[in-house]
Amino acid sequence: LLLETPTLSGAFNLNAPNPVRNRELASTLGRVLGRPSFLPAPRAMLRLVLGEVGTALVESQRAVPQHLLESGFSFQFPDIETALRDIVSQPQGAG
Image (cartoon, rainbow, N blue to C red; front, side, top):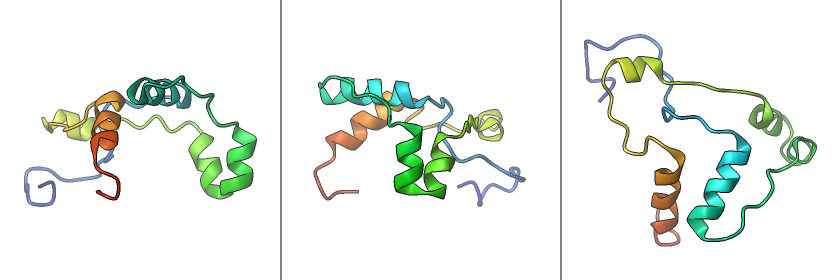
């Protein structure tokens, strides 16, 4: 729809409107799964295992989709908990 809306132009951050830190993601995932929260992955381990991708994951990237918010875009999953609940409710193998 973004490409089909002539009144919207320019660069858009295509992410949810409420970014979270690794610790909050781990805590929320534990709550959604009904299990104790595990510790966030250590930075050094992520860098070792994932290389450059690991570095990108641990560097601060607090992007907010300001342009989408200003345009009135409605997010299906505006927060991490509703997104995770939807993901874990999907049958395995479904996308």
